[in-house]
Length: 144
Ligand code: HEC
Image (cartoon, rainbow, N blue to C red; front, side, top):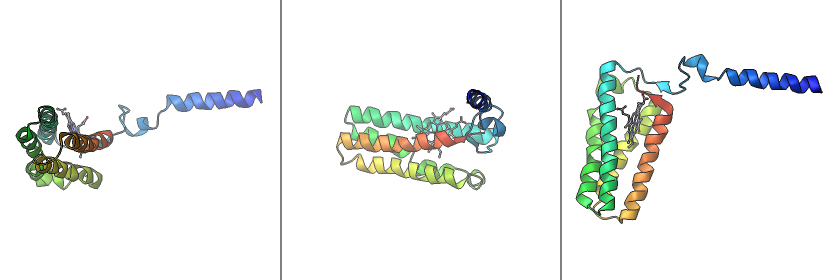
C-alpha cells in the first residue's frame, strides 16, 4: 500500500513537470497560431487596438449619456472594419476564428443602432456581451 501511494506520487510529479502544451509549442503557449506574415500581423494588431479604442469610447459615452459618442465609437469597429480584412488573409483564417470575429463586428453595429434609443444600463450589458467575444478569441488564438 505504501509503495503504491509512493508510485502514484511519483507519477503525479512527473506529469506535472511535463505540461501537455510543451509538446506542441516550445514556449508553452497553447493558443493556436494564425500563421500571419509580419506585415499582416502589424495591420491586424493595429485593428485590435482600434477595437479597444471603440470599447473605451462606448464606455465613456455610456458614463456621460452621450449617444452620439457611443454610436461613433461603435461604428468604427463595425462592418467597416470587417470589410477591411484583405482577402488573402481572410481565406487562411480558421473557421472558428471567423465564427467569433464576424459576429463581433455585427455586435458593434448593433451597439451603434441601439445607442439611439436604449437605456444606458442596457447598452452597458450589450457592451459586456460584446467583450465576451474578445475574451473567447483571445483565449484561442495568437497573431503569428
Ligand atoms: C476573432 C478573434 C478576436 C476577437 C473577436 C478579438 N480579438 Fe483582439 N486579438 C486577437 C488576437 C489573435 C490577438 C493577438 C494575440 C497574440 O498574438 O498574443 C489580439 C490582440 C489584441 C490586442 C493587443 C494589440 C497589440 O498591439 O498587441 C488588443 C488591445 C485587442 N486584441 C483588443 C480586442 C478587443 C477590445 C476586442 C473585442 C472588442 C478584441 N480584441 C476581439 C484576436 C481577436
